[in-house]
Length: 358
Image (cartoon, rainbow, N blue to C red; front, side):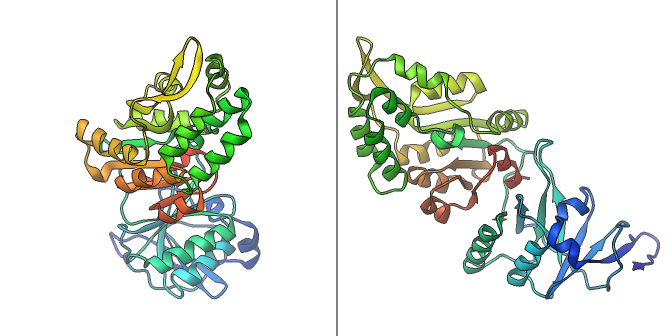
């Protein structure tokens, strides 16, 4: 149904999403970027307002309010179909229209759907929507503010299981013949069950006598996290600083710094004597507090406003770093980390961090 405009106004079209489409199709298949839409879900009926013609049945007109873009929800992932939207709207905005748009921050990413909210969400509602999104197998991120690529910014990443797909110390331990002993301690430390500095000292001690060559063997086989190279290149092209703050080891962070042309890296130094690991770490241990300090240190060094700082990690020792940044993102993270981070990406590539920026 078209509403005829007066001079200077745009045409409005109102449609209904057929039930059969809701069960098998995604909003991403129907909507296009650079256009504005509004959605209204009434029970199981989905009504859509568009500013351009679509191949859909006409629907009833509904009021369209001017939504604020300060608070938004960004939705992405394989489970994003119309029935998922209906489920979300029952919690979010029953019988009230919400403005939306498609968002594609990088050519290698699928488009995301942004819902533009009129007011902030309560903590309880945020949790309800997060739990629902997990059941629906979609990624849902609520953002009250977003760093922008139009201004200089800072990203500080964890290394193990974030920038790369492995825990380096576990791989070293396997080659040293103490893999199971070390891996069990690593898992407990990442879940926040152990003091990180003590657990690191304990794990490194088990590596005593291992030949230095095992470090190179692990480095040669390190699998980068999918999307890492593209993410770093995209941020650097927008005048962002990118750094790693890791409870791992400089042997690996130094290699990543060279490979990716990172701004800086912070990690622990393994002591090596006569070609063998001594089982000790040299100098102060890079722990959770050190990681948090890195965010503030680099932001000050490069004159980056705190609102333009982002941190991303997966383990309990990353929580202070995530809290120190304006946007702290739990990535493929332990439940404790997801619960405390401002945002979470549960699956998929590291490049999806761009969904959370403007």
